[in-house]
Image (cartoon, rainbow, N blue to C red; front, side, top):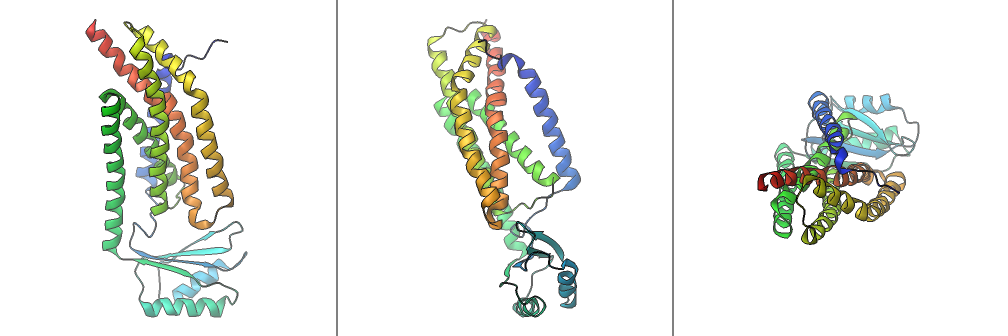
Length: 294
């Protein structure tokens, strides 16, 4: 059976990739980010009140405590968890008052989880998250440049950065909170995606050792064969992790829900990017060097 020619259709993949990237950037500029308490100064109060609790009563309680500007969202499978975000840090006295009023107004409520972050800590966390992503990217470039060649390295990193961009833009578009577990998910996605890309690049490199590629058409055939020879492994690996991430998202607790959702979305996009973008960038770049050599 004739295999679908992935490589010679790369212009369409590039077009879709560019459109999605532009749409992602626009969504981030328009909607902004729903930053969690880890990256934005303030206080988060999370408490389990039971399904069907009165949200207006919770907001009124915080207003009466003098904590204006509170933002309430619900969480949990049945919306039984109240998550209240306050713009400012609270004092120990205010924290004690919150706990006391919650018990008085909602006798069946559990002890609240209260996290308060000052502006300096929030800035430091944001800075460290950015450094972590940059360090991962630089490490990948150096490893792939040494193991393969600079074209492989740069093509792989461009593909990875687009994956990160799309995951972040989806979270921005749907106003999903971005917190430290989200950053952990992004770094995990980077690891899995580059691993899959390296497998494809390694097969291309092995074939290049024994094939005397002289024309663009021969190069495209070689890369297309490499993609299909590694396709089963790529798909099976990604599906295995997707099933695990999906189970975490459906059955895991609220604390890891955003992590598992980011992981689920990122693995799908990352797997497609490894096959449809990374190797296509390399073959386009390598084909130009063939023309120059000729």
